[in-house]
Length: 415
Image (cartoon, rainbow, N blue to C red):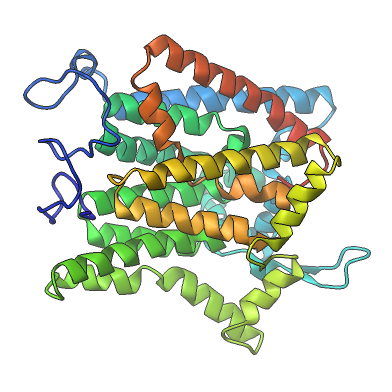
């Protein structure tokens, strides 16, 4: 399989492709003209499809914001505080306003929770936004998150359109925005930022833009721990290209592969040095939060707990979503035409999510940036009638609108 498609530098492809370089396993069956554009695309050329995708995202998630705001008002809470000061958001706001150094110990927990567990880029961006935006830090945090989410939506569209065509790219954005945990894209969390860097880094790899891919991977690595998945995609893609060319790849490919993990590694090492343990210090901080890699033992215990009859909505939804993600991952891996960077990125996110212990109800949130998992579903929906796609998206969005307020205002568990 070639790492790059269409106008990337690698011209020979080991997988079966059609004449315009689109992988056949994901290609939608639509009549095209000599330029490869579908009839539907020709009719909508007046409106850039990326703007259509952004509008779809804004409509779906805008509805989610309105529902959460209405539920907050109904329960006597401030919508701004619910959206911008829930759970981890409080820690990011503290870092943005006061810097690192906060610790906390909950009653009954012997370990100390440190704000060093949170990567620095999002708080830095909040601080920068607050310098030009009047009002509280909460508003700045939401502004950064919402801009990042919009950028992520366009990036997700670009990846989907590159592989499947414009219509499928819009469908990919719609499904992604309608996921049950897509409400996290409306909160002051780091998922929107990571999704934006990941989507555009993957798109850069598909286009052969190694410098952009590496730079975005560095930024992703400074955003949250799972940002290492973006670096892994770039590094493995570079290694594949180097091996394919028998070591004669351009210098930018070598540089991208080496530089991609720099953001993640620099913060992990910095925390470790400050704690007197360069290699293990950061992971000790994570252990204080109950987060450690146990190869899935904790997750299996959690699933067994739910299947044993200890049923509550958040736990049950978590098990259902994790099961669905595994099925989609299997379908994605079985399609030999999926580009290598997407497989690596998604695979690393899956390993970190399923193999890590910790807050189990948060695991679907960890997979929110793993939008390539939706490609098999999009490939099927793109062959259906437009009305079917609209109905499916509408139903999913409705379920998301109901689950979001429950998770934030009723469940009592950290999303």
